[in-house]
Image (cartoon, rainbow, N blue to C red):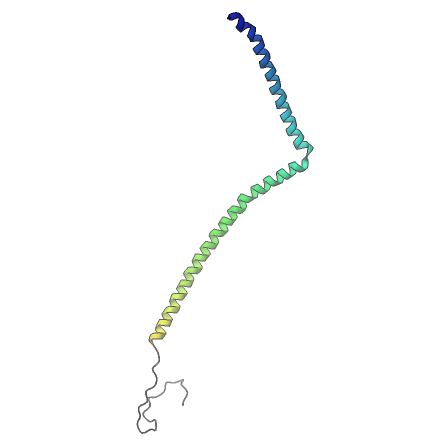
Length: 127
């Protein structure tokens, strides 16, 4: 049994060395592919950079939009409160006018000369 393990040891070491060499080759190929991609096609690299910049702008725009929305909601609340106050005032005036209506002049038939008519308030036109 000891002999078999010793015989297999060099073979396992050979496979390990071969796998190590394949791994190093693959890593160097991947590195070279990355370098080729970056150097060989600058248009793609600049486009990727441009897209990254655009992505960075979106959170800023989103934050600005949220701030603007907050301001508009606040303004809306203020305008609604102002509108309610104006409506309340208008309704009070309307109710007051409905309760206080001018009374028509009372004519008491007398001799028909109109001598017993109540005096007209200033500002009313004579009939």
